[in-house]
Amino acid sequence: MAMNEPFDWRRSDRRLFALVAIMFPVIVLIGFARTYYLKFAFDAPPVPSLIVHLHGLVMTLWVGYFIAQVWLIRSKNARLHMKVGMAGVALASLIIVLGFFTAAGSAKFGSNSAPPGIPPVSFAIVPMVDLLMFALFFGGAIYYRKRPANHKRLMLLTVLNFLPPAIARIPLAAVAAAGPLVFFGVPTVLAIAFVIYDTWRNRKLNKVFLIGSILLIASYPLRIIASGTDTWIGFMTWVTTWAA
Image 1: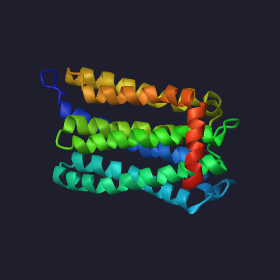
Image 2: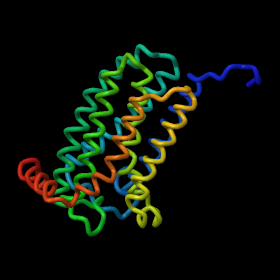
Image 3: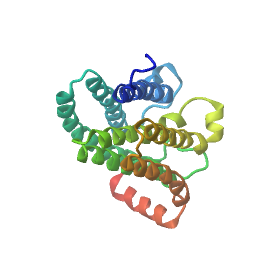
Image 4: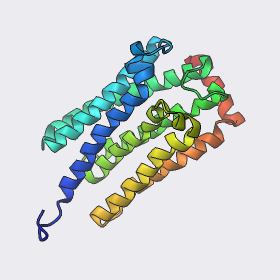
């Protein structure tokens, strides 16, 4: 790029989302390879139920959906991007419904994903709040679908929101030893970095992006604090009596 050539902010934006569209499936594949995608190659426990299989399927479709939407924008096919985006509402609804019943089942019968020593009912707050954050971010993205600046940043937050389950399953001793410090810490650092970079790049702070990032980051310690309270345990115990 020549020294006097103006910086192309839109091209930089597309490169960032292209990078996210590459790294998102890579992290998901690495994290879930041993227990789901490539479990036939490892001595992993069987998938416990059909609902878990369906949950895995719709989450995989979501990864593909995000990649496709990024590709459509990079290929300058905004009209098809918007049509596919509305179809994504149905997929998002399935994610929330199946995710809820999967989390309820794990809370009642236990799950291999729960850390040792943490009651399944307490750990259920992690996926439940994931679903709440996803509903907020994707719902906001649909609401702002005609305002690309807000729309794409909220979609980016849906990706950050779904990173912890994959990161927590990466088969590295350091990840297992660090626990929440890693699987909550990585999306926290990324969210802060993206907000700073986005503000510097555009010379303007996007308030929707900032508020969404704060909500996501604040949810992490709040989950840990609330997970062992009588209120949460009582709520999830009630949920499991009819949902699992």
